[in-house]
Amino acid sequence: MRASSDGLFTETAIPNPGTVPGVHPFSVLRSDLGPWIQRRRAWNDLGLNSQTGREHVNTFSRDDHAFTRMLSRTNGGLSTFDPVLAEASYEWYCPEGGTILDPFAGGSVRGLVAGNGGYPYTGVDLSPEQIEANEQQANAWRERDLLAAHPSWVVGDAADVLPTLPDGGYDYVFTCPPYFNLERYSDHPADLSAMAWEDFARAYREIIAESVRCLALNRFSTWVVGEVRNSAGHVRGLIPLTIAAHEQAGAHLYNDAILLNRIGTAAMRLPQQWRASRKAGRIHQYVLTFVKGDPRQAARALQGTEGGGCAA
Image (cartoon, rainbow, N blue to C red; front, side, top):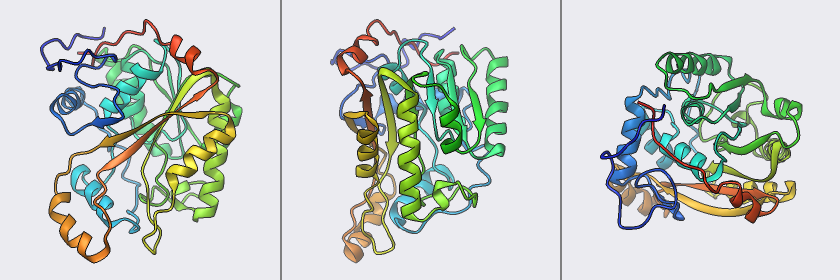
């Protein structure tokens, strides 16, 4: 079902230890380079519509003006998830046909990419409108024979839904949580993006702990996160919080990578921003991968996993 991508990408001279053509598991992931851009275009050509169902997203926080402007200019006002990062992460860290848990599902991208690759996917999201839109897209993909496994989404607060899931029931956790209030999703009292920082941190730790409990022993978990600033301009420390919460829950940081985005118009805005505040232009996110149990056994479970490409 999954079509070959031969001829679409140009391989470098470096043997690819992963399975996505031209995308290598380095500690810096270059989403601004040709192979990644071509791969993203191939996914988008299949009909990914990552903004559908996100009309309820209200406003950007003003804690980090440069980063929010970058998101607005590149994504029509909304942050969207990169399908190439999802595809590569699944191939690198999830056993073939393994089950994936996404505590902060948001749009359809991670679920559709998982289904296309044959990974059973469960996503949790507060918004019924978002999940309805995701399911409509999944049904359309299934009718076009683009899904080897049908993704499922659950409406609800991850803090309530995850405790109902079985211990060790998933082979991989992959998610992109709210970056605190950088993007305001709703006014729902359980929405992390609408909370004060102290409440956000407490709920965030609880959800991370539950996600680790749901993860099978000797398996990986990847969280894609970005830093945010408070009203005084200080970096809040979302990355250290994410790492500490996993460590406390029994999952240890195993790989840390930088997802480097295209510079785009950030280069034009940087001089004024730097002179006024000495704030660096933020053009990256963090891809933090944790392991529960023995990393050697976790890696052994992935041996023989084969990749493919977008279904055509």
